[in-house]
Length: 371
Image: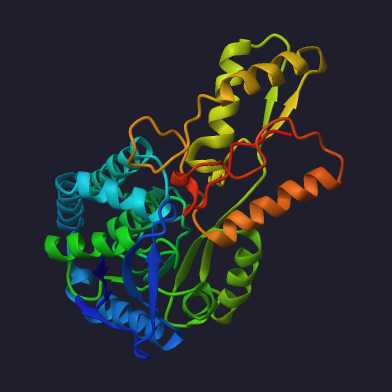
């Protein structure tokens, strides 16, 4: 169990209120760490740090070449710590180790990609009438607030941080209050890489308060959010305070469409992966199937016959393909949806309940379910 602090102005800080949140392993119920519980005043301080770093710090005059070198360094540090980061990701959000290892490798690749892209940010010139020149220069937006969800904590951090830093922006990253640990470990690597103070700030706290401040604060020039549609609307409303730029990546209920002329075995395997990879906790999960009637029975029978191969358990256990849901609240939400499906007359053909056995008793496990 580790006690963490937030990263603001290149220093490790507590929340001003001294509030803390305990973080648990969703598979075992074990206490993993304790993190600060930031509120609006803490986030406002982090935004102020990013604003000062953008307006008056060395980042403004750091060349694109040198910005890229910082990102390359972060990539190398992630690779150095890949085993530890992957295991922590498994413990914090529940995913199987193979998926966590892929996420960590992809996070390192992301910083490496944008490290190379930093020197490739080009403007353009345009022909205009008369004796003059018209041209476009691409400049950093400024201070970027970044809010990420709980399903891909480290990878989402990389996707938000790397492009903003390559462009020359300063940032405030807020990971989900459920899965903040690898983002805080990443802060240690960013500090080790020598990024100037205030350029990267990482705060931990709930969306209500901490996330709202990022959206509403007038010192923040842009906010990027990945998460649910309801929260996305609130972000958009808060961002109207200074007409800041907004990027929203929201959830969906995505369909897989299967026609009779398909490779049936490939379709079955693809459908199972689309629905149950990462416990189905994916904003692009293909958890809705639209199937041509003539192959409907064969497809369903094939999925049911193979679903038993999806081994449930702690993500660090060899052979496990599906871990627990991220929290008890989320488990209850999914169970409620299952009951709604039954009440509305959908035919439950497998799953729909908690697995039996002592190894599942303390975790947020639910069997893969098909209606």
